[in-house]
Image (cartoon, one colour):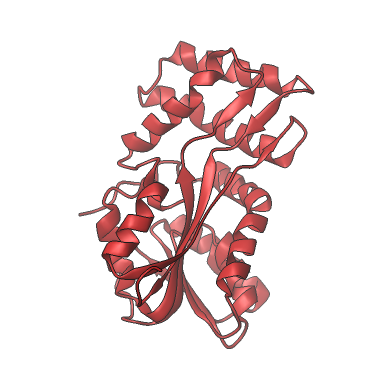
Length: 273
């Protein structure tokens, strides 16, 4: 089964959005890596690596003696990462052009398998996890950072934007994804003999001058028209949503609340206590 193209697009605008996204969420991801204990010498797999912003952070942690493999189905993003690796003189970043379901990966090899904002877009979560587990060494960690798509809101309430969480959930489902995928992971890990070691949600919030507000603005400015193109919402509703967003952006007392992003990690071997 061939996975559908990346719902959010593969282009320069999405590249720039992903890079800015990492300035907002990168500290959350790196604190997750701190808790996991990612260390020098580890062999890591970054699944759905995109342009490699997390791959580069992992490489900085594992050093010369470690290794990071970026698994990514979009050649455009892999080319960006290859250029970044060359500029840094890093030779222990490997690139694989494939999806997790289709890739040929070494068996029982990686100390860490990680994916951020991938499982929400996966049409068959059990198959996705099973394929990755074949490449995880005994005692290794599989870790996902992804949405449990609740909590998204703008304050003050009362405008068209109050419906946006439902609309985004429909957007994810239109590409075969699941906006609640993170909530399914503990049970799935247990079924595959993994020991759950972390399940931690994060919500970021801020006003119109904050980075998290700007991050949200980039996403919704790019993707609200796309949702109208796909027929998820009428065009006039898309225009009303964007107008409501802009009105909040001009209000110094407005607040944006992100959807919940959950850090989920499990270890291969042993049962949860």
